[in-house]
Structures are given as structure tokens and as C-alpha cells.
Amino acid sequence: MSNLRENTKAILDSVKDYPTATVICASKYLTAPMMDEIYHAGIRHFGENHAQALLDKQNKLTLPDICWHFIGHLQTNKVKQIINQIEYLHSLDRIKLAEAIQTYRILPLNCFIEVNLGEEDTKTGIHPSDLTNFIQALKKYDKINVVGLMAMGILDDKSKTQTIFKTLVSLKETHQLKYVSMGMTDDYLMALSLGSDFVRVGRKFIL
Ligand SMILES: *Cc1c(COP(=O)(O)O)cnc(C)c1O
Image (cartoon, rainbow, N blue to C red; front, side, top):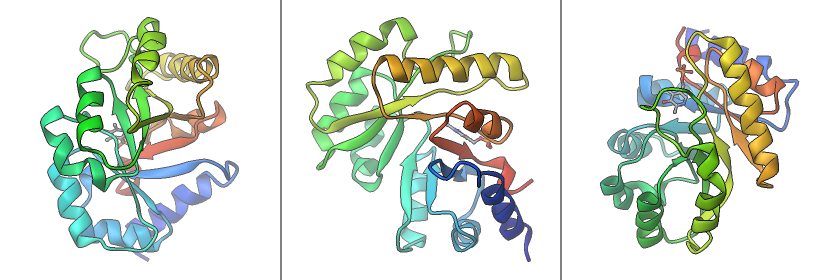
């Protein structure tokens, strides 16, 4: 067995105690043939960060049941190209983006609001104190179906990451949303133990 196949099996095995959680393969480091192999080892959800890479890979991978997510920062000027090519967006973080989605999207899109729970000002996402207003403002866009909240942990800080994940789950409950999208290669098992519904795992497929 190739490493990709073994790694995929190991990742799926590691989440078997969480049957309702979904593993999204964060595929920015992967080529289409690698993703094809991961698909055939059992993964159905793929998440891209770049508009052009999404389109290129979709052209090469016409597989039944494949589900595409956009997980990275989405530039407003890329919305038209890709917005009808995905089933979930994990990075809704500004009204301008919501407006562009409303303009170009045909059917309602499942969206996670990205929440900024890290400390650096550079991180994208809605500040938790602005979340109520943001959710309210999104109600007028019928092409946006808010399904949950997304956040990133902090690299090499398990304790802060744990606090972020707990806060995200509690915000999800406060706002009566359905899902949280949290957890990457270094912290997806912790994220699952804290209630993650969607983990976005990249490097672990090729480690
Ligand atoms: C790359 C990426 C991931 C996966 O990160 P790994 O550390 O490679 O598992 C998850 N979410 C987003 C938004 C990413 O850009």
C-alpha cells in the first residue's frame, strides 16, 4: 500500500469514535492524482484554499459523491468563478463577501462564519463581540445559509487552542447554529473530543 492510502486509512480509523463527524481533506498540498487515491481510500470531502486550484482539480476529479468545500480566505473577485462549484464555504468573514455570494450564487450555500478567536490582529474572521450583528445582517441574503462557525487553533499552543475550540462550541450554542468546523492535523483529535463536526486535515495525509 502507498503511504497516501495507509495515511488515509489511519486518519479514518482515528476518527471512528466520532461517527457523525466529517473529515475534510484540506488538499492545498496535494495534486489531483493524490486526491484521487485518497478518495479511493474512503474520503469524500475535499477543501481547497485557492479558486484556481479548486477549478483545476474539479476538472480532473469527476468522481461520484465527491463533496467540495472552500476553506481558505475567499477574495471577493473570485466569487463568480467558484461559488456555484462548492457545497460549503468555511470562511465567510465580511459583508462584502456575502454580497458577492448573493449576486452570483444560484442555490443557497451552506456557510460557516469564520470567527477570530486568536489574539493576533492579523487573523481574519469576525470578532466574537460582532457575531450577533453579523448573523443578523446575513439574514437578508437568501443565498446564504449559515450552518455554523469556523475557527483556527494556534500553532504549537495546545492550551490556547483548547480554549479557542471550547469558546467556538459555546458560541455555536449561544447562536443556535448547527455545526462547528475546527481542528487540523495537529489538533483534530482534541477538536473532535470537544465536539467538532468538521475537521480540516491536510499535512497528515502526506506525513
Ligand atoms: C491548510 C489548512 C488546513 C489544514 O492544515 P494542516 O495543518 O495541513 O492539517 C485547515 N484549514 C485551513 C483553512 C487550511 O488552510
